[in-house]
Length: 319
Ligand SMILES: [Zn+2]
Ligand SMILES: [Zn+2]
Image (cartoon, rainbow, N blue to C red; front, top):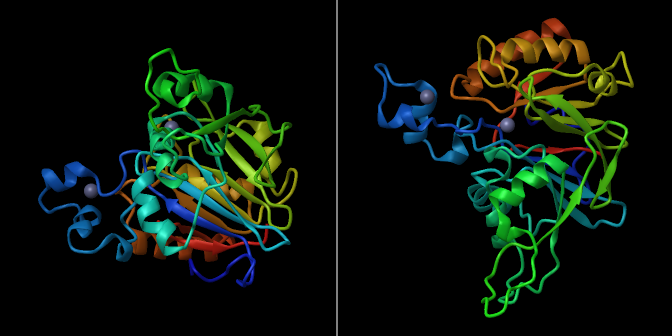
């Protein structure tokens, strides 16, 4: 079901969403399940020892989405949401598989390690220049994320060289601050995005994004609670029904202080009532085929198709 039910008929010149990563911050397989296996061993993680990643939907890199945005002129713009710890692996696997030749812009949800630590490696997908004389990639981020990145990566913030200092090749960025408000849309590579502030723990605001004119898509990767104003903007009973909701789910059971787990994710989907939903951010507690069978049942009962996404999934969508 995950590859059928596309939101657009695939053809030359169509836009698509490419799931570069659908896993939690420590990614799947969980390293401890491999180096200190339990008895019996973790079913999900031990699959990574016998199946190559591209045949293993339980192999999950840090959550990240690539929007292949194709406007009327047939030109493709590639917009990346989040650049986590696995960015380089995601490029090597999925940019090649889906023939992505470059990146046009980057949008950050927040400044946690699994959303930003790949920024250094963006150099690898930029043209080579020993003098750093290239067009920078625009990064859209909140003021809070900007301050954190200035501390994590001071060398990625452009400064004049001091006298006698050698030029070293680093990724080139043009940093653009966005407002943490549903009222303040911004445009990245020709596509409009509405920021969706959400609680990611009660002491922290992360951003989701709403985009697409023909098909309305909301992407919310790190959430423990929806503020009322944000939920209104993406709800069928509020500003209008989404065609697709891409939503966080960390553990299969229970709850967590900084993320939705499966029960809260399904509750939120019922309230928001999109035409369709795909889940991301999963730990090794989720077993792709088994839990998608459970979700097929749930979807029939509730009338909203929901499935776990998987790394490498490409979904044609009319933006
Ligand atoms: Zn495991
Ligand atoms: Zn986070």
